[in-house]
Image (tube, rainbow, N blue to C red; front, side, top):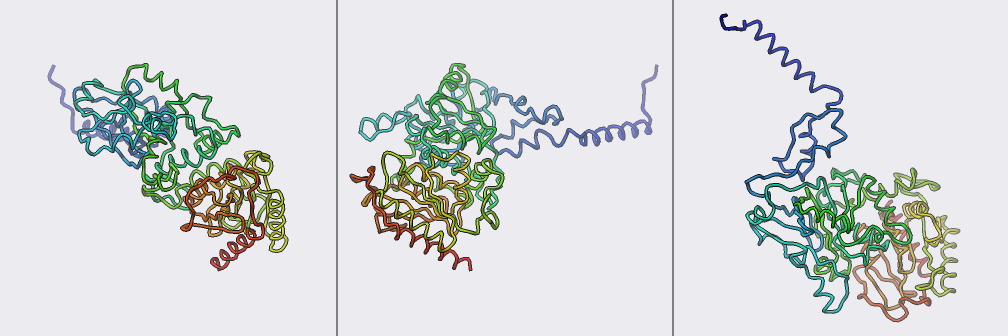
Length: 486
């Protein structure tokens, strides 16, 4: 039989048929893009890992099934990239882990920050020389190795922990406290991570993918929640899809004796942050993160999620323009029902009287509350509407995180005369609001703040306050803001 030779007409028809199949396959209803298109939007995926398999209706919701190991075969182990770093807060791409130890793979170790600025042993934090020394990291905590050393140690591939991870290398010492969780650990995590999107607009929209997991290698699942259940509320409302892993999970991963690699991980370490200059100046571990670039609206995505979860209308009960109440809202967070750090009873009553005078004279909304008597939803609703928040130094002032920063937004904190701590002062300023501290009838604000001090009486129940002086400052703040608005 003679060989078959297609005619020109047959070749043309075949070409048209193939072109038609390609055209219509790209427009199949379930095929809105390829895996490559989606993964290219994620900054932590290296080019050689991209899967070019077409995305179908069956696969677009199961991307984790496509998570193959990071493989280099006989080639060079992909190096770790340090995306951002300040003491205590570091973003890595391709950070490796084996047998519970973290590995930074780099052929330029001189470019890697000193280890004690990135991680610690996670020992409990104390001030004695022995306790400080015990926090210093060892090779068990982290090693910096060359690509050749990694090839010998790791073999030819690593199992991927895909997406963005947050890893908190802290002991439980401070985590089970609402302020230290929300205004330090969570605060610093997000400020560090948000440095990758320094153009977050006032609306809070961000291109950053939500973290996929939060890992605690040194605490168990029973020791991260606070007594008021605020920690889990903040985490679950900020990131509804996030998963959590704890000490036993970390040990189980280590027991696999397989190399793991984080696509992208934000590593937080309280003790490492304490070695930084910003901590020495403020005693706030999150302060170092503010040395990184960032938007003035950096906290807005978190506030929007947490407050938005608490109420569909965060300004219910008050007239508002662009989400800001037109009538100023004054909230005094009282500690008079607690057993320490309280105002003198007569001074408390005088303060309440003066605040009610402001209400009756100028029409301001005034709330006198004890936060532990409110539900979590009520706390977030009230804080989100508050213009001026005040109270004795204490955990209740953590609610300032959910205030909306405006020219009027102010936090007024009462201290025993001679006492001062940066906790709420620094947090207020980090959110773009104004803070005043009070000693009786005297007040102070940045830059004229006193040194940190805890004199006898700081924790006591005889803290003096001049209610009339507080009311006068409140009136001045609101009047000045009105003039600025005009």
